[in-house]
Length: 234
Image (cartoon, rainbow, N blue to C red):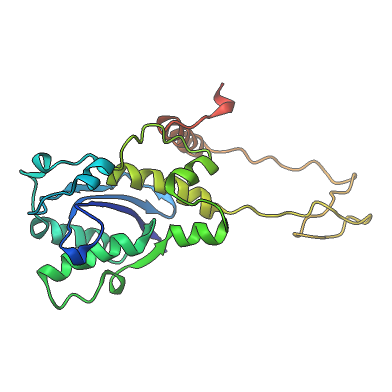
């Protein structure tokens, strides 16, 4: 069964929808079974209100830029259809979901909440649990996991979603702690590993197929494109 995840970020006119602030940008990256599909979603939205200067200082999106962009009512159905049924991966999910629920409810008072249509995974809570007592901003996590985000001079929904996708995949990939010890008889110990007896016949080597190698190279190309280092290519 395929697992569909949408790594999502928004930019807004301010910090609180209860004060009338609105969404002005939505960026989504689709993952199917933890693989990038390229079926991403990105839109700017005219909020029909002024963007606060403090917000502009964060994301750089001006009122003039948004003047000719579609309103939320024009993109809401397409956006809902895109995320419906997926697991949403969001850093500080309460912020983005709060704005999304506000926007949907302005159009339909019967809307019960994004959480009734999508699963929600908060990577901020995930990072706090995995790295207690440490800074877990997106920038701090990029540094921790060796992700190059030097091109992130300002916040942007699609750029931040792309970066968060990389962070999430590394943070959730886990690391298996394997006990390499075994007893003198080569019996299974620890994580089920055992010492291979000296008289064991030579093991068969299974080589990757051409298709598997091509997909591996595509992944390395993506790593380099995002500023990562692929040392063994050098």
